[in-house]
Amino acid sequence: MTGEERELVAEEAPRLFAVVERVPELHVAAWGLEFEDGAQVVSEDGSLRMSLQGPESCLHLFKGSELLWI
Image (cartoon, rainbow, N blue to C red; front, side):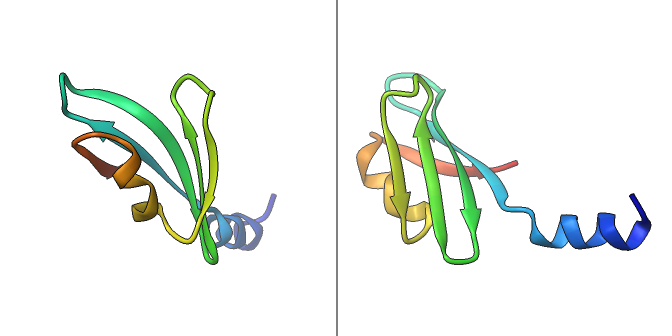
């Protein structure tokens, strides 16, 4: 892979984030990918999958949660 190809892939890659709950204790509740036109979120146990307008749209589903960008 050329340097130009690596740069293109890096620019196009979705951003990875974790949805972290602090209640009752700190743990990762879900993982997500942010794309230009929305986000995909999967709960940590895989039981819930969502397509959203943006990463913040899932925060109301997880108690005391916040996004942590990877």
